[in-house]
Figure 1 (cartoon, rainbow over the protein chains, first blue to last red):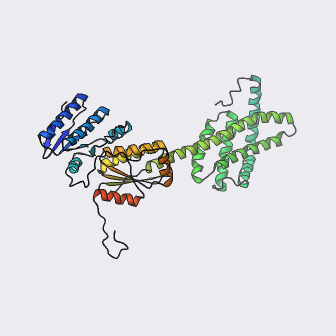
Figure 2: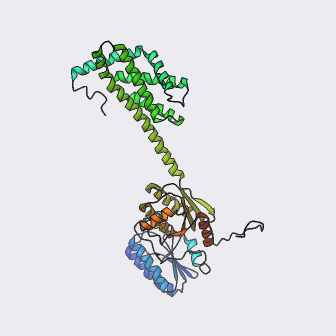
Figure 3: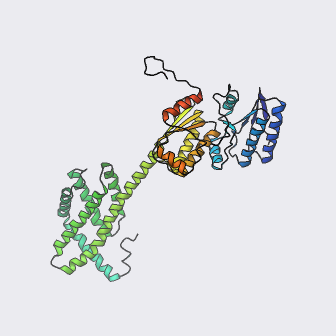
Length: 128
Length: 299
């Protein structure tokens, strides 16, 4: 199942529509990293609202995407993680460290479009 | 639980005589009903038991307890008595009747009846002995049944109240647009911790919260599973795009957390609730301004 990637102004929006296999995830990663340079995007939003399971491979891939895109000069924010999914991820130790997260698409856009570093949530890489 | 018939199969002839003695006993108690009941009610008042009830109520209850008691002696089955004890407990517990009172009155009745047996058979000591042999185990069973019934009813009520407290115990309050407060009062047990997480995450979603202040001023202590659970909750909230600020950690809790080595690096902590709300407002870009110059201090 391919993930549609829409260009919205300076941002890319990838909306996951259904459960993804590992290959789908790798494909998504490659396409995003490729497109972000191609389209000169400033930010990427990955919307995972439709996922009711996010396993370790998915978490790692999402984290990799975020780090790779940062190296390509843009920002990534993961949006729409469901409450139950969030808690089971944390239980498994999958905390998406260093990756920005937002409640939904709207919040994600607001985060990327924030002036300076005001109201948005910085992805944290420090663990104290 | 045997109900008195357990011993019955063991020695047939003895059972026969125990049964006949119990019959004799029941007949005696029925005959003396009015007088013994009166005596019992008098003793209850004298011992200052059931002070929450009026004299008339005590007498009415005494009558039905007496009849149930005799019936249990006669039939050797305790279901009816058990049901009655439960029903009675339901009625008297809300009025503040204590366990010692219930046990006390049942033991008083046992004594009153035993006395009447002494009085009746005092000339024939062997017979008295045999009657008491039949009477005592049954009477003790009855006392236990009533006391257990009362305690079970109390426990049921306590359980219900715990449930109710639990449901009321984790309110999620919105103080500003996108700012939630969760004040927590009382001990957090694993079940409550789970509920807390659920409510917090759901609250973030429904209120589209960006910052949540989790105030644990009212929590006396925390153990390591619960502390870890809190850390996980904070992480999960972050995955939903919200920041959690924990406020009001008491010195004891702070010490415990450090001693058991919970990783608090990921937690945003502020001394008190006020500080937490101020920090949250700062994160959300609010600025509180005093409108009247005359007020004590500018913000």
